[in-house]
Image (cartoon, rainbow, N blue to C red):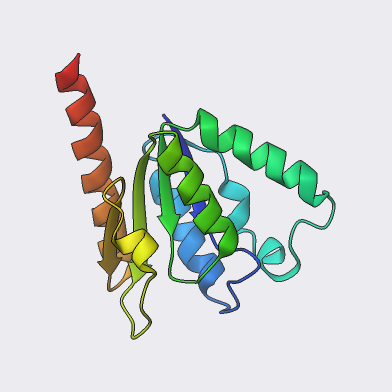
Amino acid sequence: MKIYFAAAIRGAKEPFASEIYKSLIKHLQNYGSVLTEHIANSEILTKGETEFSDSYIYKRDITWLLSADIVIAEVTYPSLGVGFEIATAVEHNKKILCLKRKDDKMISAMISGCDKLEYKEYSDISEAKELISKYIKDKFRENSNEK
């Protein structure tokens, strides 16, 4: 299975964001290949991918996104890029799970109100992993029953 993990890079200013991303990516690797595992790199979160042009990053990421079987998006940190990735995934009928850490910040209704994706909130990393496992098992069991 090819997994596209989306999360804020330029907008994730909290130092523990990379630890959350690393933990979720490691968990996702139990289910398949994570095409975007590099985003857990703390240097990328602080500096971005400076060795590549924005055009290169866009083309590479869209190629990965369109080839993915499933999209898991960590949406705690607002990100125009992640919103764009989610919208593109919706338009291409991808299976999408959006996860947000429970806090006092509201999520955009464009995410929580979209019936083409599943949106869940989590209290801690173990709950996020449970939500991912359940989503993947449910969605891929559905597909096997359709055949």
